[in-house]
Length: 116
Length: 113
Image 1 (tube, rainbow over the protein chains, first blue to last red):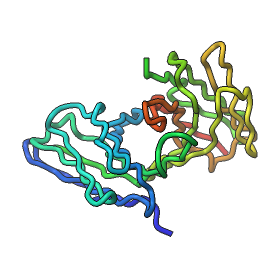
Image 2 (cartoon, one colour; image 1 turned 90 degrees about the vertical axis):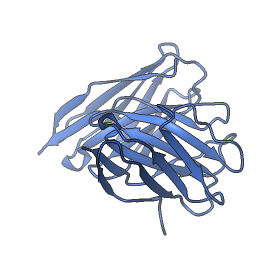
Image 3 (spheres, rainbow over the protein chains, first blue to last red; image 1 turned 180 degrees about the horizontal axis):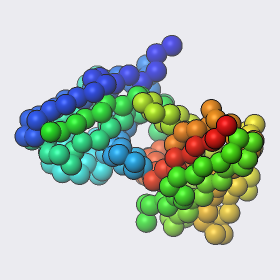
Image 4 (cartoon, rainbow over the protein chains, first blue to last red; image 1 turned 45 degrees about the vertical axis):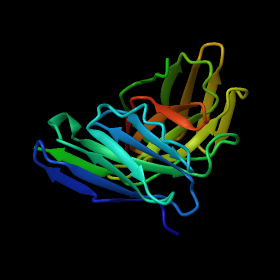
């Protein structure tokens, strides 16, 4: 019974480099969410994919951040020209089709990104 | 408008005591209020949740109290155990598609043996 998986679990990168973070949602879940959790802080919404609809990108903090979801399954969050303030844990969650009844979001273990 | 304010930031409770974490919100469009539990190195996991038309929900040692008029809700952990030591997040659901969550800042709970 696979849950949400994320890779890598840890990533250390130099300032200015690009990074890609991967999320494999639970099979059958059509909604996928990315959040950022800074040290000792709550979860900050970044982007949301629902089925084949256009993603809700309203939480992305800058145009250096982008995300794709291929084939309605795996998602990749890309951060270009990383800055030290990008250091955080990036969490992915998935759920059944959003809207209507309430569907629980299941979280992955996160990717800890450190920008040096 | 989309914020949920959570307090306290940290809490130390003796084993067997009651842990209480409070959250407040402004947006009356929120329609679902879950609590998540997060252990170090893990993602958050749903603990218990409530709809705004219910004033209280209890699951085992965990109870949510909801005050719609005050726009406040709280998590009570009865008979707190060292295994309850974790970070707790309240959240509220919003969004045009109805499944977006905005989270409180978190409470780090430590239960001393």
